[in-house]
Length: 339
Image (cartoon, rainbow, N blue to C red; front, side, top):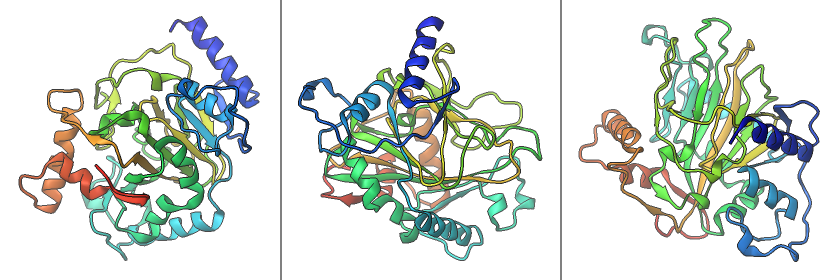
């Protein structure tokens, strides 16, 4: 895509969302149901008809690979998730299988259990309080538009992006990537991420940046970027992408939720504020999805890293990538079928 096409695409995107400044999208209310009578179902590749999304919303996701729903999760629920995260940071609870991660700049000798040293917790499927997020009716109502009625929660995270203002090493950045790089299951069109802002999020504290329309392309090779200040574990990035592709920064309020395709190229900038930036997310998949063998593919590097990390942490021998994901996955609606 040349620069003129990218510029034209961004202009259309911003006009659609009623934004005033190029490159930034303010989470826009997208409720309402429109008639699909004039649109043939075969024209939709990425969404399913269940009378939840309007025609405009379906077209927008089909074209861009993401959709923001404003004020979807309540303040009360977000506060509960925040409280549980703080309990985990203080080591008052230790859910089975949970991974607690700290920023690469924090030395082991400086580690004191608190919110200030934890940059992310993931795999909270055994923490019933945090896992409530994955079964919220308001979340699943939209997830079903992408996965169908049998829904698996496959990967869970609460991100606590630390401020970079202190060390100046910019390690809170997340390189541009595609989430499908991490997932050994397909088809990709039956997978969706729900990502909810737990507070106001903008470019100053490291909002999401997306490259609209890139979900239509292939899965690209990923690896660790060569950043001077260091890179956090598992923060793989795309090695080769079109730098002329339009970029859109998602400015979101607390409770706003973005749903996006696993091939959408996205990342986040550094946190230039003095505080921590929190978001909670889950990747959902149709229970009819199937596992694939990633040996010999561009995903082999992350697969080995995941298996080695889990084996070392839990002392498992002969564990497979499928074993890891089978443990992570929990059914949240309908039946567990393949995953």
